[in-house]
Length: 343
Ligand code: ASP
Image: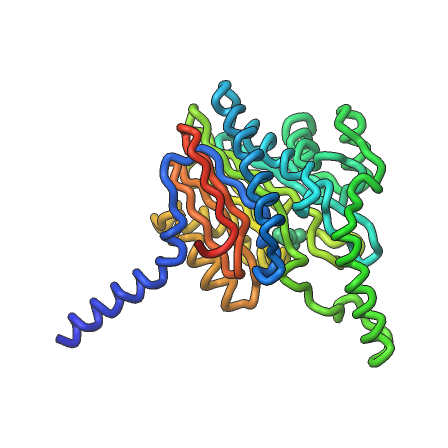
């Protein structure tokens, strides 16, 4: 009796634990994307909702068209991310958040699940599409990661689109950093100078990053992530997005992953690799592994964020411990699904 109760208790516990992740699983997916944790639900307006859904759909359709014309999963990931980088709505490329010093410093990475080759860029200020810069590092250099000026010189030599730093400026991000500066000035008046590590914690609405995971006809997985980082980040701070194994990972034997959230936690918990490792070595499903890492490990540690996972069979799962996650996917036959919050 006791054993039966215990066993059914365990089954019930496991089912309850998986419920929030399981309702987000979609099969036959060839491309999945995210646009970050998004804004707090109270700040969402019908107009913004419409615009976000439109850009996510456009990114999916552009990536899907690549796949349909014989492009690789890397092509689909790069194409979808470029659309989101070009949108001022999302925190990547144009629309990136501002650093504490009032600049835009961008990070991106991409990984090929077949060869395990990867490329990334961090702290760049003049490269219009950092995801294309990351891919160039992977394919045209002997390195995995280039930062700052070196990355910018490399991108210029590769003939990538170079812009003036002012290209990345958007009014809503500028207002956000100004509000923080005001808050800091008030605190400083009350408490004296604030060391940078004591800056007020970021609010949910200050996060946001874009990412994509894809599976092509040859069965190859790829993942990519691009971001402006976290609002009010310190000059030179690098988050998880350009770090392979933290914000991005792809392995044909398991899955492709892209993350978003409080980057320091994602680096410390090697989140994207941890999800792949649980799938490979423990036999966990995409939803169970992502749920364990995001909704248990990270949540217990106080790290807010999310991951999208596309496994080698085309099952797309998402996990988030935040109020919402801008996420979308497209199946092989072109069926689009977009979600922003719990739906
Ligand atoms: N993970 C990104 C970073 O920490 C931010 C985000 O996803 O919103 O730089």
